[in-house]
Length: 490
Ligand code: ADP
Ligand code: G6P
Image 1 (tube, protein in one colour):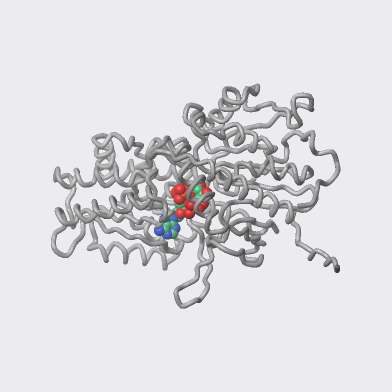
Image 2: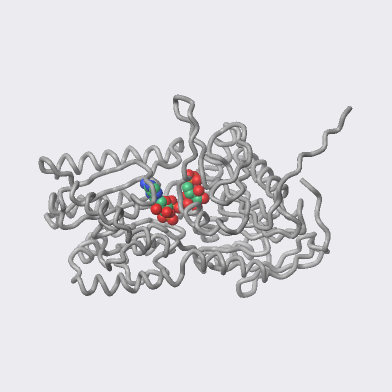
């Protein structure tokens, strides 16, 4: 038997591990292959901080079946991980998005528990850990992201005790009463405690995690740290920090983009194609039940009914990116939103104008910037959201100090963007009043607010977030497992 030498694998000092790669492979019906930017805030943020760091990104290419070969894109080495059709159903749509996502977002829809989904989640997390172990250089920094990969830190630690492992949660971490429902809660906590540092969006999220460690796993916590025994009760104790480092966006990049003549002209064109309304309201979201789109439409419909606003003087543009389209709750949401938009337009649109213009597409960054620049009132009304980067993107595009941001208090962004028009989307009466306050605010008040909002985002941009995160990870205490040797190879 001939033993073939293992092909040499490139290794990196910085490795990002996320469920999705920054680009998705899409094969058109005629067989042509395209790579498209993946949806969501995780990719928006990490895509801004990875170029120039000579790093690798381990993730799924968005299609069931064999993984494409590794490739370099935008200065990053992309290492695809394969998911079978069954794993897409059980690990991604199932455990990640029908079990964890609802539990981590206040059970806005109910969560489903299946043991076979959990088994798939474990198996796929193991595969991601192995892929990360292969591309991480000795002593590398491995940065694991989000709820889909909570077992990766401990699995990777087992394979590669030499690497430094961080995990960042882009979504909320649930209160202990909700987290407790998960039959696999202890394994999830233990999976995360394989990391050197755990980052969260809000202090409340980090506190929820620490409370789960204390109450559900019996681990002692002190301040923002938790102590555990990675090698069993007789082994050496180790302390892990869990703390808030809120994510952000590339302020300068967006500010610059929104100042280009092309984007300014496009913003004017968007307004004119909508009939130059006096007030253009805008919503931009993944079509997700956490985003409060139905609450927003309800408030708007009532404002139309009450005669507070009327087309064509007022228009609402709702951009809803397709998302998780095979999951029942998302399909139901789409049906409800599209039905509501149809009803509102049927009842309130005059000939030649639409009360609500609804777009179910993804757009390039420049088009998003033009939309933000065109909108007088930005409606960000999630029922629960880890951060909400759309809110930060909107203010970054408003170099003209125009526009007003209506922002749900249930977003991570509300912890920072105090000068927004803050609302509780469950309170439809209050939401209507807040929208009208934003519409009617004197220009001087709107400009003062926008100036302060922009300063906040400019001073706390995504580069600063990444730097703070990586510094916190680098200064984490040495783990007992890291004994100056390199671990088992994957
Ligand atoms: P989430 O990560 O839950 O989707 P965020 O608001 O944090 O929510 O991030 C959403 C990201 O996706 C933002 O960068 C936003 O600009 C982008 N985005 C949302 N809708 C679209 C769209 N239709 N086309 C292109 N990008 C979009
Ligand atoms: C949120 C999550 C990300 C996820 C994104 C898009 O931002 O935090 O982890 O990638 O939504 O969702 P999808 O299921 O399409 O990856």
